[in-house]
Length: 280
Image (cartoon, rainbow, N blue to C red; front, side, top):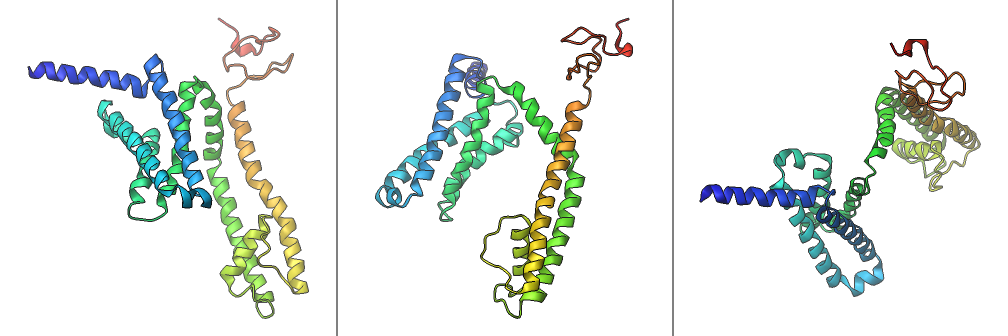
């Protein structure tokens, strides 16, 4: 009797697993599409709730809808934990963490006011569309970009460290120049904030220099800002080029790129690529 119950439970787990985790069957694909519609709808409802007119006139209706959404997503999350063979692996996976963080804001909102608006994190669950629409092959391109950033992390770190030192230095100089005659530069942290806003070319305008020397230095910082913005872009672009060109062979005849490292002939013109790649 016990064996039959275990077999029945195992059979149910397999069925639920196929529905909630796989999209290569009609029921799984329908479930994923329904889930995506539910996710997008819940995010739109959260955004609409922040509009004063809707918030004041339909507050309780929005609360009821949010409870329904949270109940559905919580049930789905528990089903995923129940039917998977290794729940811990799912819980701490990327999708598992996204699923968890998509329902936590509502529960935290019971104790901390306003945090339920973070339910817009559910929008990250739309990443499952890659699996539903068979777009996983395009994830390779995003991996190349991610690897380029990771491989350039030391250069990027050095750049931001240099930038941090620069804005601290410039902010301190501007404080020394402007503090006596300009109430905007009332402290070095405020001056550093101004330096960051200026050097990134954001330019809020809430703080601005009024002394001639301060304006000259501010002009130099603005010009410096344009060159600084280009640095991280160049670092990542160089890393991206290195990743895309690595292991790729270019045809000497038609200059077509993207051949496999061990390819013998060009896929476009048929020209021999490399003597070392001749088939034996």
